Amino acid sequence: MKKRLFSGTAPTGVLTIGNYLGALRNWAVRQEEYDSLFSIVDMHALTVPRDGRELRQRSRDFLCLYLACGLDPEKSTLFLQSGNPAHGELAWILSCHTAMGELSRMTQYKAKAQKSGANAGLFTYPVLMAADILLYGTHLVPVGDDQKQHLELARRLAVRFNKKYGELFTLPEPLIPEKTGRIMNLKDPSSKMDKSHPERETFIALTDTPGEITRKISRAKTDSRGTFDLNDRESGIGNLVRIYSALTGLGEGTVVWEYEHRGYGPFKRDLAEILCESLRPIRERYGEIRGDESYLTELLKRGEEKARRKSEPVLTRVKEAVGLGI
Ligand code: AMP
Ligand code: TRP
Image (cartoon, rainbow, N blue to C red; front, side, top):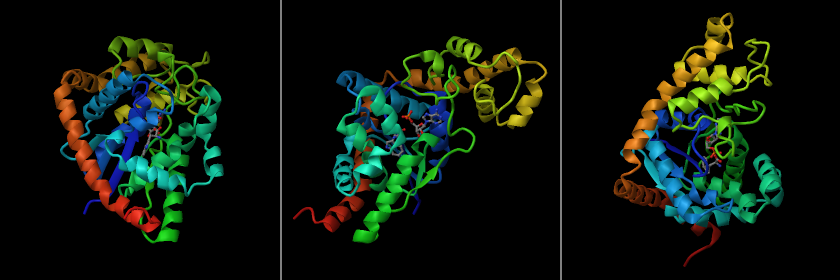
């Protein structure tokens, strides 16, 4: 039997090159080797109030981008989190085994609560995420660097549960890319590239046109000294070189060697072209499938059924263990 893999994103904002290099690209590679589930975690999106109709559309936008990035519905399970009620059920059970302090020290919660005013869903978000993962007996969770802390909670809950009730959960391992686990904001290289940032200049979206990509890269922050110091977080050049290197497979040293005497101008022009070419097939495929609503509905229905089936054994055992049901 193949090992299990689970990952997902909340359908908010627009998927970026950060999401791609930090997570999605890895998903596509691993689906050959693992029995993979890729979810559009729409229940997570409710932690910030939003329009229902828009959320439903956005979930489909994300599904199409999953497909365009190479996720294969014949090999993997692609589904909406809300399509499998087991996520909510397990989340409740896990939340009754989670200490308040474990949640209040979450970095993402602290940052978001400050910005938007917290609701209880934002607070318990990591428990729902732990449920997403543990529900399927997941071995591997490919994510970006910012999810490390959430993964640790999922692991802690698995251990805690197993100690108390016997071996119910598999201990999930994070898979975080070493170089591209944290792609930075183009305008402010000290913060992470964020798919929900109100300013589009701060990120490259997977559906950006070549014109948009070229403009954004030409305006991306570097410094006036023109050096290629990869560790200078202020200048953002390290971030751009990492993107270049990740998309071409060339080592960072080789990239620096190629451009340090020619300067930022040629470097940015080439990087923009590499981005345009790398994202072109994704943008084109997205355009081909996004209009086919009945195909997408069919796909989501199929995914939902598969996900429900795959989660049943764990949920049944957990409910039995904690004393729920007849
Ligand atoms: P989010 O954008 O928070 O929904 O994240 C979806 C997935 O992409 C998660 O696995 C994140 O860790 C990953 N991710 C998000 N932003 C970045 C980034 N700037 N660099 C690398 N990975 C990211
Ligand atoms: N919290 C993740 C993010 O913001 C999304 C997510 C929810 C997730 N459930 C998950 C990722 C389970 C991996 C596994 O990106």
